Amino acid sequence: MTRLLMLSLIALLLGCDAPKEETAGAMGNLMGSNTEGYAQVIKGKALSFPKDHQAHNDFRQEWWYLTANLTTESGEPLGVQWTQFRIALSPGSTESPLESASASSSWATNQLYMAHSALTTSDKHLTQERWSRGHPELAGTSMAPLTIKLDEWRWQSQGEQLFPAELQVVGDKMSYQLTLKSDAPLQLQGDQGYSIKNASGKVASYYYSQPFIEINGTVKIDGQTQKVTGKGWLDREWSSQFLDRHQQGWDWFALRLDDGSALMLFQLRTNAQEKPFFSARRMYPDGRGRNIESQAITMKATDWQQIGESSYPVAWQIAIPSEQLKLTISPLNPDSLMPLSVRYWEGPIQISGSHQGQGYMELTGY
Image 1 (cartoon, rainbow, N blue to C red):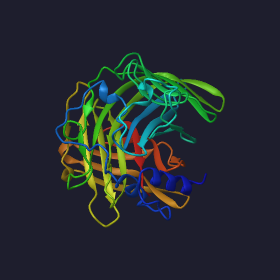
Image 2: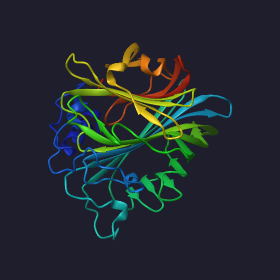
Image 3: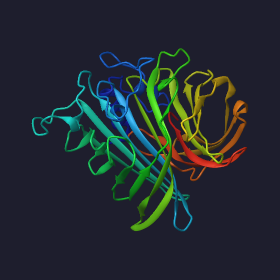
Image 4: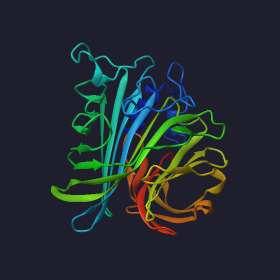
């Protein structure tokens, strides 16, 4: 199936107008309309754990999203990404597929799952994609132990909480088996988990993160298995509208700094020559964190990578004087396109400047 056909299919599944061509505004089309009948994000509603680690089938979209900066036994840096998406095809169902009372009663579902994985080195960027309907035997979430799966790609915790857990991804191009541990409190983005996505505040998601994950395990590339250790970052979001129709895409950064803190930062771009919408939070392993005013943030792309017909801003200067941050962002591998049903750039980055560190960057809508 061609990428344009798949993009059109996704748009139809989400209830949008199918794009006539692959344009930079596709992200706004895909994620910025048709919320009627779906659950809405409400400011002030408290998040509840472990319940909110599960699927929220009454919302239109959500994802579980892990990135990791790892090092091999020989000292080579590499990055790993795993994301599981859920897309409701229609409003109405709140039942989790894996919690269904009878797995054999019906294959009917209005829940679609998609999963992406990637493994990135300085000279390789390997990607994979899986699709499935929501069904106990195929894809979904369950509570005890917490399981998030699509076929044999599986996050499985030891209990109802996120950690400790094992993450398994198996494929022809690459595989990895990782042990994930964290004792740090979860970080609620925005206003206690209510994360607005435009200046009017009318578009929002529920959003929480765990930026402080210890990882060890193995990766398999080109038939060779290597031990790895490093740090991970998990993001969880769900909403029925992530963007408005005028927003083009986003530039998102998960930055782990050498003073022990972490910085989540994104800008949402519009099709017009308007100032992007910014959101940022500085976070610490003891659970402390503070949101950063958008007017305090300056971002400038300093280098671009041409990949096919699109050019991606793969290097940046980021300045936040109120946080004493002046950061230079550079990619481990500038050719880190995810050439999947919806194209985007995703890869590990190095940080220099006022602070040193590592992290991940995601660029969409180019």
